[in-house]
Length: 320
Image (tube, rainbow, N blue to C red; front, side, top):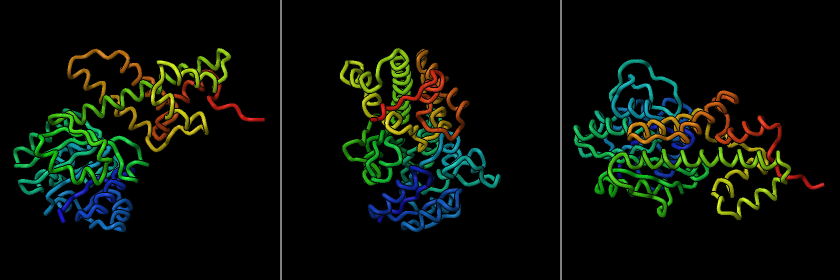
C-alpha cells in the first residue's frame, strides 16, 4: 500500500480522506481540530501529531485547506505552522517543520485547496528545490460529492506528476471529471474562474427573478420561460431551486469562503492584466451579503440580499 499523508480534515477533506483510505491507501492524517482527527481515525487513518509527523515516510501528501495562508503555512512553513487544520485556528506559535521539509526527496504533493497561483508558485519552487513533485488539484462538487467520491478535479502540473497522482485522484473524484489542464497553476486558475462564473450566475439570477416577480410575473411562469430560453444556465435551471423550493441558502459553503474565492479570482485577473469590472462588482455584492448575514451564511445569500431589498421571498406559489 502506498503510504499517504493527508492534511486538512474539514467539511470536504474529511470525506476525501475517508475515500482514499477506502481505496486501499495507507493513510496518516493530521488536523489542528482533535475531533476531526479522531473521526479520521475511526475510518482507518493513523493520527499524526504534527505536519512533520504526518509526512514522515509518506510517498504522497494530499492537502485540503481553507485558503492560501494555510497552504503556504503547511507546505512552506511560513506562519509558524498556523494553518495545518480545517479551520482558521492558529497553531502553537512555534515555528513548525514544513511538509516540504519533512517529505523525502522523490515524494509527490497533491494540493487540493482552492488557493492562489502566487502561493502555488512559491510551493512549486520550494518543492522542486527538495526534489519533490507538486500537482495543484482543487475540487468542485460540494460536500455531497465529497462524500460519494465523485468530485470534479482540476489539475495542473507536469504530466508525469499528474500520472502519479491519478490513483489517489480517482479515489476522490469522478474519473470522467478529472481534468489535467496544463502546467502548474492551471488547476488553481480554472477553479477560481469556475467559482467566479457560478457566482456571476447567482447574482444575475437573483436580479432577474426579483425584478420579474416585482413586475407582476408569476415566479413559476417566469422561471419556466427563462429555462427554455437562450438565457438558461445550470444555476437558473437547477442550483437556485433549493431557494425556490424551501428557502435553503446552502450553508454548506460559508460566505467567508465565497468572498475569499471571489477575491482570489479578482486578484488573478489583476495579476494577468485583465480588467474585470463585472467580477469586481459581483465580488462586492457578495461582500455586502456577507456583511449583512454573517461569515457563516450560506453561499446563496446574494439571492436573499435581493429578496430583502425588494421585500419579497422567491418561493413557488403554495397550492390552496
